[in-house]
Image 1: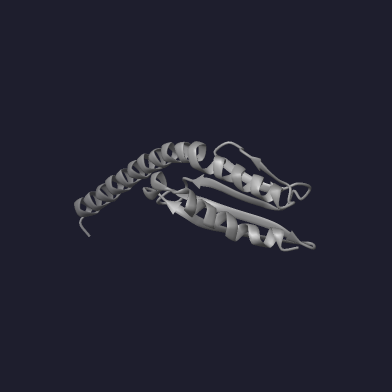
Image 2: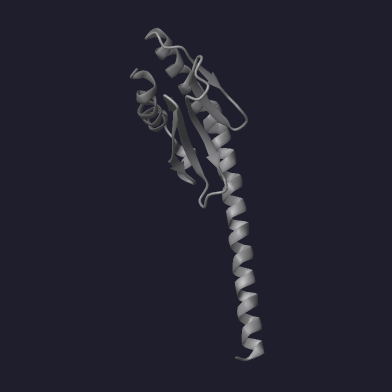
Length: 142
């Protein structure tokens, strides 16, 4: 192979990789901005409303807001949790719904995509509520 041809191809590969990295960083920054707004305006109020409705039904659930996430967990069961957080390591960045609950000595967990960038900014309460209700069923069936 010609050395000049190898160098051109290496240079092209480096340029493409750098552009892809810049694009990922831009998408991650946009997704973080969108998620910050959705977290404040949609997710936290929805989780608090769900916790309030559960309390009316006799279930004690607490809402926590660790940095960049919102979490719903029943009182007294630290293993049981429903959480929504942004994952910027994915391409495209995605809002991930995580659930974990204990069954005896087993800890069952699940993780799924709730929304991906760029649709993250248009996330509706109904989409989040569907996720929360599907994740909630195993925790309240006892």
